Image 1 (tube, rainbow, N blue to C red):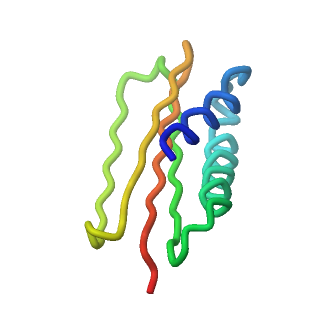
Image 2 (spheres, rainbow, N blue to C red):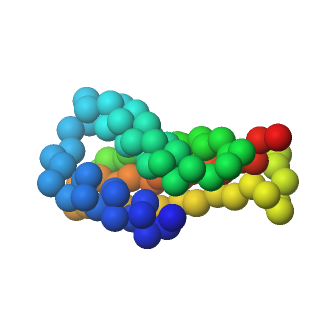
Length: 99
């Protein structure tokens, strides 16, 4: 799944021209597409949460924290980073087992 996410971000973003005004829409589109990619794999009884952060490399500071309560034997998390000369993208997908 890590390889799938890396290839997906690379193919989606290699020709992307970063504009700060469009960063919100980019994050929304990427998170929806990543969630759909995981759903296509048809993992039984799992729900997926996708979080995508898009940042400008000219900014001086960036902080991101997440917390969760989950079952370490059934739930999992995967994060991939994409860097371009002017921006970066951090994509995280949580797979949460649902009974």
